[in-house]
Image (tube, rainbow, N blue to C red):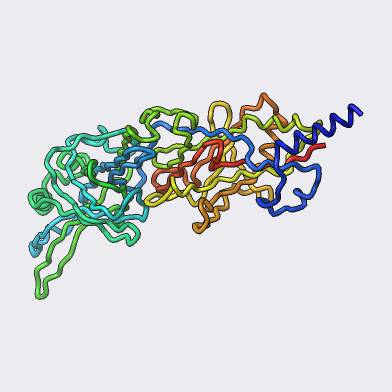
Length: 437
């Protein structure tokens, strides 16, 4: 009788502490098995891991602008480049009339922030060379900066339409453009080689209005790294309007990307330090951003508790569901189309990633968009094998998961994802089907 009573009591505890349903999974056979228990929202811990500095040179991408994100703070991007000397040019022709010069930038389609607002940029000449040599060995990072002269040689105030990819032209001052033309026309000694030319024109800096700009854009350049276009006319029976492009050295071009986290959810972080902060220290949020860059660390601190229910336990299915919270991820921001789940060790070092048990390829979330349902857009990952490994390793396991954009670099896309980590209704849920005997 005592054994029967104990068994009844145990069954009541199980029934009160879990919920059986099959609405979230296609495999209905699991929910029909009386030995299967389903947890709809098993305990998940979230943290945000911010990396420190990152390389921004030799990317052939000019990142320019400034944007204040309420979650991440103000991000400001400035670009620097050394200009290639004009080894050959058409300006020794006596029939040429010089017109003007511009800096040309072509939007590559990636942007961060409000594109409807006016956009302002200034161009300066550099006061110092990029490095002390003309080689390409040096790596520049987002925290680097090269002093520039105070005189503005070109300004832009316009609205940029990044998806149209219309070229942006910044007209350069006549004094600067004419002097550059004369040096070339007269075959001046300053255009003898790169070492001499970089003493005449050390390079250029393109700087945004960091107070009024509301967007950051990514630009490429035309042709083979053309950056300064010089317009001229060839006189003849019929005058011809032509142009000549000065290029930059890709290995000597970099982006300074600076951060001011004050007043934002991200304010507990230091801009130049690698840090891990739990969601409780970030207004119960976890934050992912490939511009910072920051990743989301996912742990399952209570996963071994499933073994307390039955003498034998096996995870039949474990599904990690990540929803896109509409209130936290609305326009003008974009969430990643694909994300990876990396497995890390106790030192937060990423190793392998979660793969499909069918194809062996990395799982990318299988994003499903449903804007008609509140928070209906979501990613899904099958982590059954991973959870079973955690249970096998027991309390000595040092593994964790890290959520990362599929293209984790700042220059490949502009995406961010803010997750609500409140225990009552979190944006990341672990759904478990547990076999207990």
